[in-house]
Length: 111
Length: 115
Picture 1 (spheres, each protein chain N blue to C red):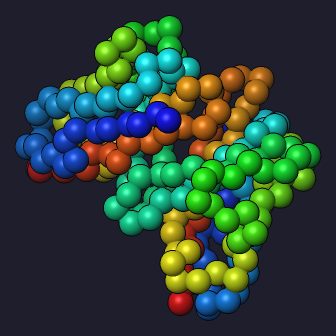
Picture 2: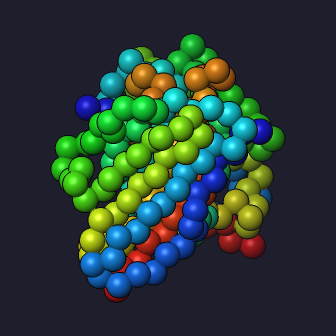
């Protein structure tokens, strides 16, 4: 069964700093990997989706990379802003159907 | 882009009440929908996979007689929590797979509080 781990569990940074969130997974035979943002008490906002054949995806200040062979993905956030404060979830799908979620990284960007 | 809606967004009920949550794909047909739940400070865990016109597949440890899933059409799946108890209080999120676009979209979630 796929297991997804996210490190760190919590992160606090001053505004403007660049930061990296890490995700690792145990089964490298994935179909795709997705990064989500979740605000307190809210649903999921999809940030970036990386297919198994891709190495990275970019959207604005966000860049996600994927290294299937090592079972790792990183989410890079440039020039962080207080509005980036949220929990970031990494999720992996082996078949394109169900997703296995990590426990998330709670990010606080201090003004 | 594609949208998945859930109704209601929040429900508070007394113990023993049955609660129905709807998940709709608004602009695509979803042959497969998924139901997840998220307990406080934990991540999402898959409860069941719902295929249109057939019985749902439940994950280990999820009681199928308590969490009744109906996927009667290509745009609607319902989750009914039968005789809800306080330990069922959770955030329930559905997702729908757009087979044509090979993409999955998540709903906004339903927060269930059982008193």
